[in-house]
Amino acid sequence: LIAHFHVNWLSPVKIRKTLVGGSRKMLVWNDLEQEETLKIYDKGVDIKTQKGVYDLLAEYRMGDMISPNIPHVEALKMEVDYFAECIKNSQNPHNDARAGFEVVRLLEASDRSLESNGAQIRLD
Image 1 (cartoon, rainbow, N blue to C red):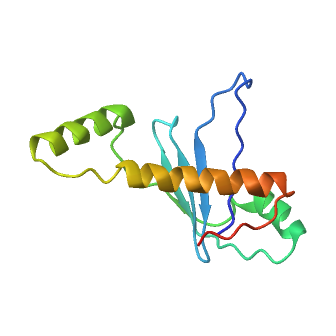
Image 2: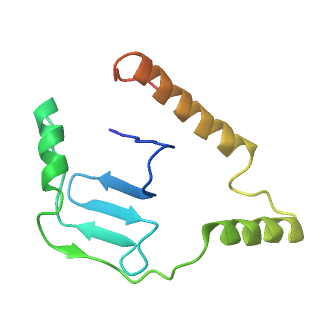
Image 3: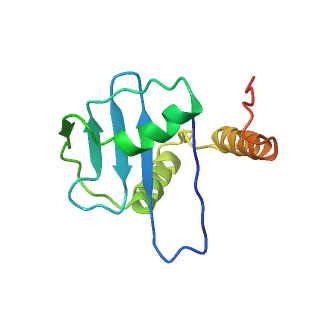
């Protein structure tokens, strides 16, 4: 897995975009886009050198693209509704304390990678 996070609290521009690259397709999720929230590109990822990373960033729009119709739903409302259903039905939510722990573990690994100039960090 190769991941890149860009966080900037000072930016005057709100950006909520996620790019996921696989061996055959690439997915771009833009939470601020009303019409085409999800775009799937017919382009794979094959990174062998550092230069390949930069080439990929410039070329990811090449190839066919499909954008399935996804209803726009406010994320926080969905989470609140889900939480209420879990309480009502006495179910354990999928986003419980254990899931939160895993998120924190990944974020801490990202911090360690940053402190080590982008070194790979094993998650055991």
